[in-house]
Length: 121
Image (tube, rainbow, N blue to C red):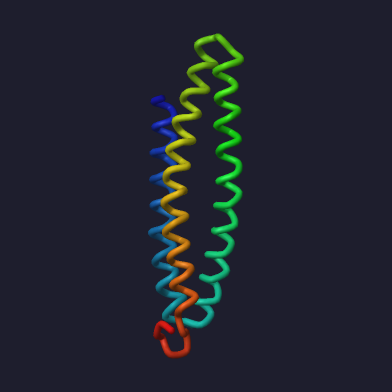
C-alpha cells in the first residue's frame, strides 16, 4: 500500500507541476490570439473527453483482473498485489470521475463563448 500511495503522490505532484506550466502558456496564447486559443482549447477538451471514455472502460477491466488475482492465487503476495491494485485504481477512478465532470462543464462553457465579442452567447 505504501508503494501505491507513493506512486499516486508522485503522479499527483507531476500533474500539478505540468498544469501550472500549462496555465502560464495558456495565458500567453490567449493574449496573443484569443480565437486560435479558443479553437485549440475546444480540440483539447474534445480529445480529453475521449481519453476519459477510454479510461472509464479500461480501469474497471483492470479492477476485475485484480479481483481475479485475489480469487485465483492463494499466495499472500498475489493477494496483496490484487488488493493494492484495486485500491489504487479506485482512487484513480474517483479522481478521473471528478476531473471528467469538471472538463464537461468547461467544454459546455467554451461552446457558449463568442470569441469575436468576448462574451457568452
